[in-house]
Image 1 (cartoon, one colour):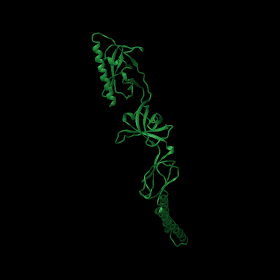
Image 2 (tube, one colour):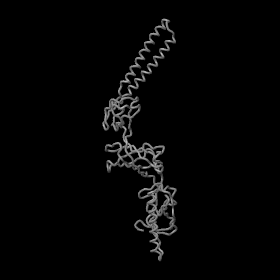
Image 3 (tube, one colour):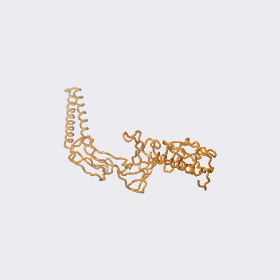
Image 4 (cartoon, helix red, strand yellow):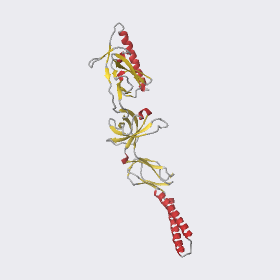
Length: 348
């Protein structure tokens, strides 16, 4: 919308200039002059602007497999953690009893199997009886394996070295299976900026495109980043597409939640024209009009900009009828008028 208003303001200013110029030259036939700029096709990456918050690339929420009473929390938010360090554990009374019960079941089943194997050798038991007891032993061993596994996951150990960014429970709380207890970020994971782009912008970028990040916490310093992920689906609420920019180079420490502005250099633009903004003579309904040279006269050429920059708009190579575009002085001309091309040292 801002771009349309801007172009409409240009149109109003141009119309005013034409009226003033016409009243002054009514009594004299004047050949107007304008500068002709020959456009050259280019495929230089164009910047797309976005903003968002910095997050750790590798963030993990840690929980218990079973529910129970939380007895031991050893770390606070902001503390560093080493890989393999014990962070929290449940009250193991019930869990240890389950392991002991399962172990006792295995021991009994093993004794039964040993006794009936000997009886079978003495022809005092059938083969089916031995096989049934062997099946019971297998079931008991499986139950012991489950209980031992649950016992092991009733304690939380750090899967990687990093920092605790959130502690989401307190000692003596009754926690449920899978309830997050800690959130940590891994030191080796790196940092990224997640931004949301419109459909028109997201189709212009691709994986590997470079970006510059301006981080509010470090005014004047630029971080280098690269596009590492482009969402396939739009966000159901905002309608934008998530794009992940992985930070590849920065000489200052970064924290989760830092705000940053990104300039993404979209490489998908191929063979386009950069039309100077002073060549625009009208702008209506997302279309702009420029004057191009047709021998000694002026011809209008309209197109829908692919991109609008600070001092130029982008036109596809097949959108302009002629690449000899009138810039300075074009606002004083009308389509079909004769004009005199300005030399490099002339002014309109």
